[in-house]
Amino acid sequence: MSDPSPNEPDPRSSRSSSKSLLARLASRFQPEPASLDDVKSFLLNAHEQRLLDADAYSVISATLAVADKTAGDVMVPRSRIDMLDITKPLSELLPDIIETGHSRFPVYENDRDNIIGILLAKDLLLTITNPDIDLRPLVRPAVFIPESKRLNVLLHDFRGSRNHLAVVINEYGGTSGLITMEDVLEQIVGDIEDEYDEEEETTIFETGSNSWRAMGTTNIETFNRSFGTQLPDDEYDTLGGWFTSELGHIPKRGDHLLHEGLTLTVVGADAKRVLWLHIQRGPQLAVTSSPSAA
Image: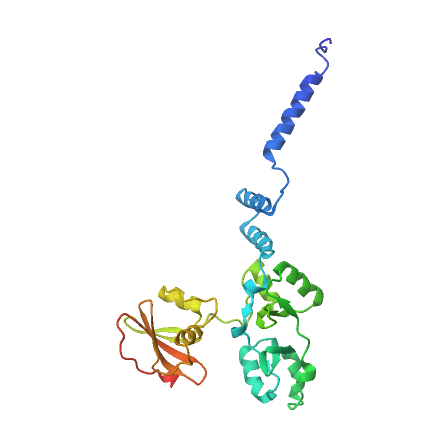
């Protein structure tokens, strides 16, 4: 084969240049993602190279993470659901409806596991002209889902059915909790606050050196964070619920427990639950009642 003339391009040189270009491109771009972990690595790389800003990266990453979460992971537990008893007259229900400020309420009959539907607060406008109206016809069908339902599937169902709330049930058919469209969206974009949202209620008050007073409704996570304790939160959500379980009966004033160097003493209770607890770190001291708990 004769060499090309000085005025003609050398095809061997062209092939060499093409291979060099392909090699450079191959070294610059990674193969297409083959797994979810590859996608996450790709997004992280894009964020580190400032192709995605922090907000975009956070939202996209959270959206991917939603597929790994279930309704049971983010639901409001049964003990914290604000429900309405359909057997009660409206005059008894209205104070709770107004105080909580929810737009939707699960409605039960006789037993909290027997949820018969959902009542929309806006439908109660009809009671302005007729306070004796029967609420049953206003109750809408409830949507029930298992704890294992994936959040990405649930969000798709919410959008398709135009429902904003679902009752989460366990394997035995009992009520486990409640989940809303807002709960799912907050997993992607963070907390969504409106004009009715309030800051977290203060439930623990310092009363002296190594001495505190806590409401029975104090969240266990909040208590553990405040005192460096390890109270379990897998079965109970509140300090009062845990205390009752440990005691083995409905607490009464004066009942106390020792736990992780703390003395917890009931200073206020009613026939059903703990209202106030005195917490003392170190040796147990005499405890007086709280005016709020009288």
